[in-house]
Image (cartoon, rainbow, N blue to C red; front, side, top):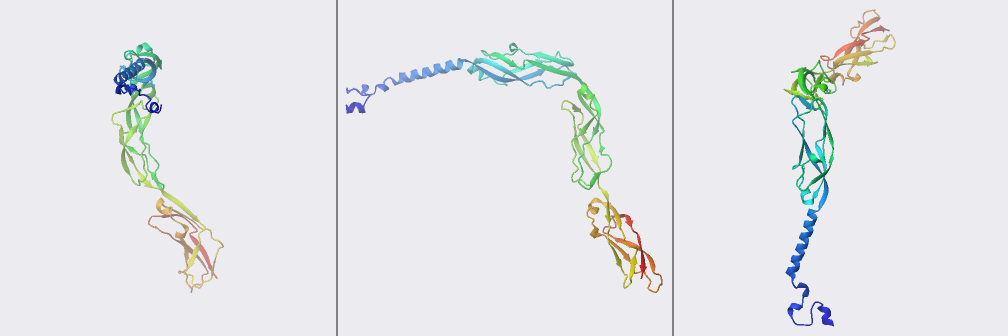
Length: 326
């Protein structure tokens, strides 16, 4: 009983061939298994299945002098049925649908697409198609000359563009649908950045079409000359103190409170940094004659400020002050 449990596949006999019956005829068993798997694979591969695929659309033979103005689809969606092995080999590269445009004219044309118009591989059937209709809108191809307008960015703070930018070509020829060209009177350049520019400069930039369907005929670049200069600004200062110098031990008085007003003009970089601390107003009493019995004087108000060779004093009030000696 114990021996039987240890060797369940062995008989009580001593013959070696009967000890492992499971391994008997192993070659035939393996062959049978291979045949069964092969038959299963063949059955499944040849079994019809359905699949969605996408193929390219080729628009051919557009008549000369016409242009397509809408955006017809570039892909066609198909529902196909056939053996799995056949469907797996279908790609957008080996199937292409062509629409012949040779008979269209200006306006809208419609093309109905049926499943019978698609030629699939052998044993494959097209069961559905989308879109089933394609619309082609065409217009006459026309040319027109239009103005060129440069697109100029903003200069840096404190600088400005002087005059109008100069162009090497003030007009350009464009080509596109006739109806669209009637609405276009000018085209622009690519944006020109003037950041960092502080003087006159010239740059070559591409012309920019307002629509992708409108093409620029001939040279599609233009040279733009832009004159950049620093701004001239005016800055005012009010209620500054007036210093009285060289009056020694004179006792004097003025006509009450004096309201001061100054205005300077100059380049942005200088005048923007000008502050009241840089400006000195003064009245000089050094010309007063001690021996003179005159008690009343009208003295000039002097102004000291930096960059006198660049900045202009545009306004000064008061220019003189009445002094009375006590």
